[in-house]
Amino acid sequence: MKRLLKLLISLALCATDLLRNAARKILRRQARSTYVVVYYHSIPKNERPHFAKQMEVLARLTTPVKLGEPLPMSSGFRYSSVTFDDVFANVLEHALPELQKWHIPSVFFVTTGRLGQKADWWPVGTAEKEETLVSEEQLRRLPEESVTIGSHSVSHPKFTCLTKASAWKELLDSREALSRALQRDISFFSFPYGAYTDASIDLCRLAGYGRVFTTIPVLASTSQEFVTGRVGVNPSDWPCEFRLKLLGSYRWLPYAFWLKKQLLSSLNRVERRRPTRSTA
Image: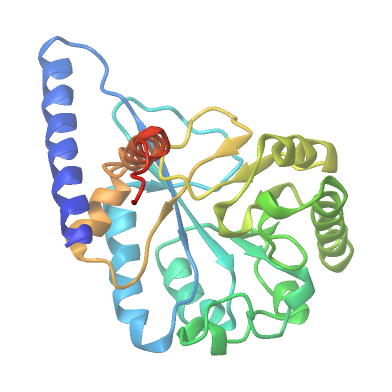
């Protein structure tokens, strides 16, 4: 039910965007460009056909671009970039061929302390917990011209729970490990669980990263921004759901999260102020 409600709200926002763009065209104003960065995790064999269809839609509906490269800023164009967090071995087997088929560049965010091992941070009972992550040797064989490697930390912690020293070690050690293994500069970082603080953003700058990525589903900037939001997608997304995500129609979600947080905070304050009944 919650998923359907999100879809309906996103449909309404999409319709509003279409009307706004039509009005701009009538008024002879330039249509606005959009840029959406999506992220996946595991791509198991049974979901490859769905992923393949999604890449076909992505290549047809948007212009896939390589992260970090300047965008042409063409009026009214839709741009997209594809990223993967954790990077399971099945991504190489099932996702990479489809990406290459449609000439879609991608970014792989890897956890350096778990290369070639299981992703033990996934909850018990999830399929991902039993999947193996890519190995260092597999990373070396990836085509550098179409696959960019970024860091996803050393041990996949929540940065909101780390001390400054621990956060610094996760950021710096993972970047240096990847640089040594791949003999190239590592400039991208993705926060595990999407959890971060202002202090951890500052540490990313100090550690030498050029751009960091969250899981906040907002439009990305076509200019060079340091913190970039991304939209979570899955091969199992409904076709309409996936298209709306590509169009940026789920960008209302952060405002809904903020409003929910404010309402809960207000309710808690009222509850604390309410006098307790005394019993005789």
